[in-house]
Amino acid sequence: MPATSPAHPRRRRRTNRLLVTAAGVLTVGALAAAALPGSASAGEQGGKGQGHGHQHGRYQDVQLLSFNDLHGNLEPPTGSSGRVTELQPDGTTKTIDAGGAEYLATHLRQARKGNAYSITAAGGDMVGASPLISGLFHDEPTIEALNKLDLDVTSVGNHEFDEGAKELARLQNGGCHPTDGCYTDKTFQGADFPYLSANVLNEKTEKPLLKPYWVWKKKDVKVGFIGVTLEGTPNIVSAEGVKGLVFKDEVETINKYAKELRRKGVKSIVALIHEGGFPASPNYNYDCDAPGAGDGISGPIADIAKNVSPEVDALVTGHTHNAYVCTIPDPAGNPRMVTSAASFGRLYTDTTLTYDRRTGDIARTAVKSANHVVSRDVPKAPDMTRLIDKWNTLAAPIGNRAIGYISGDIVKDGTESPLGDLIADAQLAYARTLDPETDLALMNPGGVRASLTYAASGAEGDGVVTFAEAFTVQPFANTVNLQTFTGEQLIQALKEQVSGSNEAAPKILQVSDGLTYTLDLTKSGADRVVTDSIRLNGEAIDPSASYRVATNSFLAGGGDGFTTLGQGADDLVGDDDLKALEQYLTANSSAGSPLAPPAADRITIVR
Image (cartoon, rainbow, N blue to C red; front, top):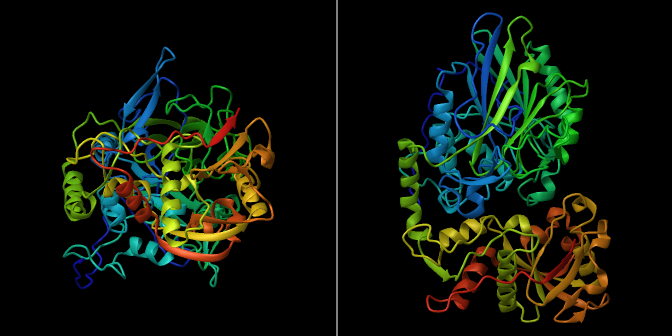
């Protein structure tokens, strides 16, 4: 049982680096912190900051270090989640193992050396969908780690709302968890940095849930930060997590508060936006501007960047887990940096903002930026090692338990992934214990957070799947839900993978054994799902027949744009989806007969 202890007064915020003005939670406040902009060339690779030369007179270089989408990855992430691809001068690529809070701390501390004016900012999703070491404790370990990293400010992301607004407020302000209590003999102190949520409003008061902006000040230099998450957050978070909240347009919100900051005399402004784009290359150091300014990236952030007020000097972004440092012209046609540091703490961005003391603004033409690898060839930060060891000791009795055996890596990568099929099969098997007439199971790809790797992550041995590893794969605590659909509804749900809100960025459901169809990517919209090809156990789907379908509770609520999956009948709510995976692995594998990776051949893809 978790320990409990009385609340203690909040510890004093650090003041040696920052002077701030603040407004309270649930009000429009005057707070801001740092974010990062920049434009990298293909030759810039991981290492220390690229130099901050102006330190005297009219101009002052301000270092902006940033990262995004950490998702509680305190330990080095495994498999493809723990690697980045680097473009070499000769055009070849190199894969580098990256990430881990012990290494991130060292890299950030090294980058700050010699930079008296340095800010560290983040673009949201610091918590949520986290590995066991953090997720088991409602992400308190990650907040403690971010405090040690001297994070100055972050925007909220969609995953900050996984457990609702009250839990987000607790992460900000501290206190024991309302159900699980305190995990140690010390009360959780909360974040030393402000979470910004300018476009997330309390439905009743119509005021921002948390502070909309924050201002970093040192001597006569001040930089304002506005934080927003994607307007579509309610579509990708459970309904309970966003209950009582309204999510406003990102551009309108940023422009509103940029004007307010300028009225308050703050002319240097950075927007922290938890929304992102898709670069033309997977290499973290790809020259995004090589095709032309703004041409090396597509997706939502490109449209946002083109419409955010010219008063904003740089955009630090996230959400898509991609790496880019791009120049996208603002509405006035002036160059403006837009950056993202991939995910899971594998990269950080180092941006130089040259502050003009005469105008109080950023000299936009002098902005420089580059992504750097959080390589594992540097010393581990001892304080971060101690933090990880503390929480691992508490998690070990639960996390180290073996629940299954595999004969090779079961990866989450691909349009249809072996791990996605495995999870769908596990949910179908579990659902049939509740209702033997269950026909099939569907799993959302975004709910599969990491691959299962054959190599041991600890002392368990190769091929052993621990509860901690399974938790990292499915950390959301969704339930397995059963609903009845007509064949026509089932066909419509499959077409929603590639139409409506999913047309531009398809979300291909992972399907259980027996369901097959063709996905023709040469076509557009809903036509990409070839209706006549859809088969269940070899038979065509009958539009007028009834089918019993298992999904997780997120999909059953219409999440990810699958509105039809929220319209089923005869609902039956089962147990945790992670328990379904655990039961399947235990029942279908052993040390002598490990489970082989599924073939991922249920969806025929035409390109």
